[in-house]
Image 1 (cartoon, helix red, strand yellow):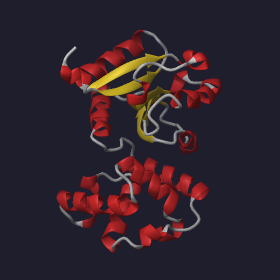
Image 2 (cartoon, helix red, strand yellow; image 1 turned 60 degrees about the horizontal axis):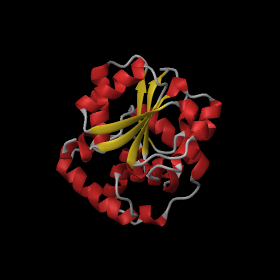
Image 3 (cartoon, one colour; image 1 turned 120 degrees about the horizontal axis):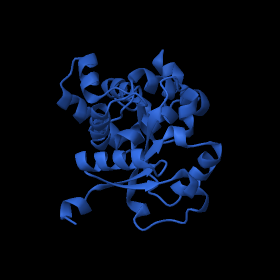
Image 4 (cartoon, one colour; image 1 turned 60 degrees about the vertical axis):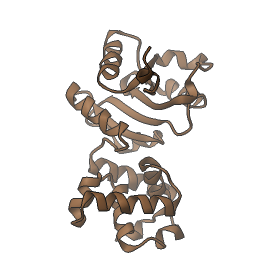
Length: 225
């Protein structure tokens, strides 16, 4: 095993142990710097941990294979993994309801059952580089659903941001990429990155997902009026 492989990002693929899942696992490992372990949903009931679980940073969930019983056991699996492990849904129905996404607390990507493999690879590359892979419309709806549940008043840390930082963090919270933020605010991408770096320090987060969760929990709806 090479050193490069040892440094691969560890992931869990929660899917049926069949040929399709094995092919997907092989495809992702061949095209991306990932080391993926396949776990069948039926194994969740008696899961007792596995060496390297604490290093898992990405959970890939084959949505059609999980029933309500599996979902209850899923939280037990998470107890063994890195608390910051992010979630990606694959094979979702295009008609998936936004409130169905609320069960995934660290969702950073959503792929549909009609997505081509090239799109899957492109999306995972974005996710591994710290971006999210969902439409801005879906992220915005996701945020609004959370905000109605979680946030009634704005955190003082937000009011201490500069006007430009406030604009940028709200756009990030709606799912905009750095390029989209730059285009919307007529800034360079490097300027956006610099503002985000400063903003992350001010609100005490270390990455984009933490910032997204912070926006959901700390910026009230009236700030968007």
